[in-house]
Image (cartoon, rainbow, N blue to C red; front, top):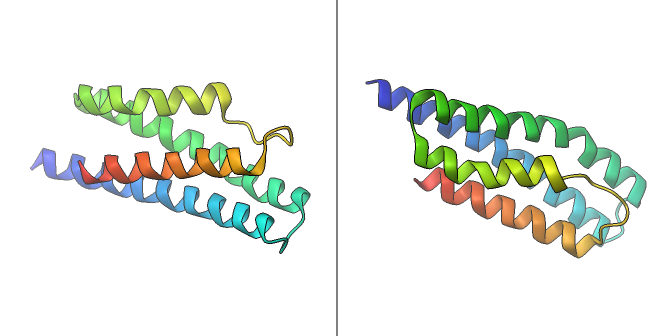
Length: 114
């Protein structure tokens, strides 16, 4: 029964992470099609970056506490990337940011499937 609750909690945390990444991809798509300007896009994305970092950190810590070592090791590179390189600066190109968000989306989807 404890494994069921662990799976449900991690499932809902991953769904929240996927929703944040989809929101960021939508903001980048709006920027690409010139619906919004770069300043508004960056401010919208920056509003959800910190919650994304917190969610990934909580998920990785949750896996450590519950003894799911493999899943924790799978989450560690994503957490490292967010801490080390995850800023939304204007020096990054739009395509590079979109590829990064798409890879994060793929990672979250694969992790949800496990």
